[in-house]
Length: 311
Image (cartoon, rainbow, N blue to C red; front, side):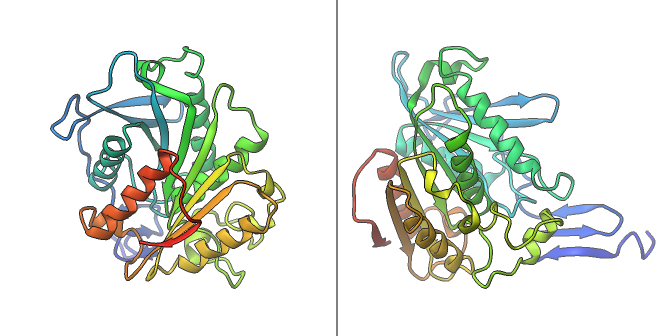
C-alpha cells in the first residue's frame, strides 16, 4: 500500500477513520445481531426493506406476548453515531431498542439511514423522512408490513433518538409540522444527548465532515435559526442530558430555545449526574441507565411529571 493510500484525512478517535483515497474504517456499529422471532428476552424482531432503490431499511421490534387484536404505541427510533457510524443491527442498538420495546410494551421501528461520508447530509434526513412516510403508509390498514398493520397504534406515535439520532428526531418533527403524515398522530419526541451546533456559534469538525457545505446558521444543526421551531409537529418533548457530556450545553440550549420559541407543548428536561455521552448504550444495566429507560418509558406511557429533574 502506498503512502498516499494510507494517508488519513479524518479521524474521530477511537470510532472512525477516513483515508484520502476514499476508504473508511468504522470501529463502532459494524457487528450484526440477527433478528429473532420470540427471542428469550420476550421481544421478536425482523428486518424490512423500506426503499430498495436506496437500500434504506429498518428493524422492527414487537413484544412477543402481543395479542392479535392488541394495538400498542409506535416508536420510531433513530440511532446515533455522528451521521457517519451506527446501525439498528449492531449489538448496542439492537439490545437497547429490544429493551425499549419490552419495557414500553410498544412496537419499535429502528431506522437504518445511509451514512456519511459515502452519503453526505442531507441524505440521512431524506432517508429518515422517507422511512417515516413508509411507516405512515400503514396507518389506514395498507402498506406491506403486517406487524405495523396488526399491532401499531398510529394515534400514539413517538420519535426517539440519541446523539445524531436526536438531531434527526428534531428535524423530523419540524418537517412533520409542514408536511403531511396522513393517519399519524405524533404525540411526542425524545432527544437523548442530542447533537446540535456549538453554543459559541462555530461549526465543529464533526458536522463539517458529514456536511462540508454547511454554515453556522444551518437550521438543521442550529434550531434557533429555524422559523418553523414554534410549530414543532408534536405536543410533548423530552430531552435527556448527561452531566459530563461535551454535548450537554448544546442540548441545554435546545431546551431554552424551544421553551422561548412560542411552541406551546409540554417540555421536559432531565440530566443524569456524573455520566458521559451514550452511557446508556455502553452500560445499559447500570442504575442510572435503567433510570433513564424508566423515565423514557413513563414518557411513552404519557405520565406527567415536573418539567426539570435529575436522574
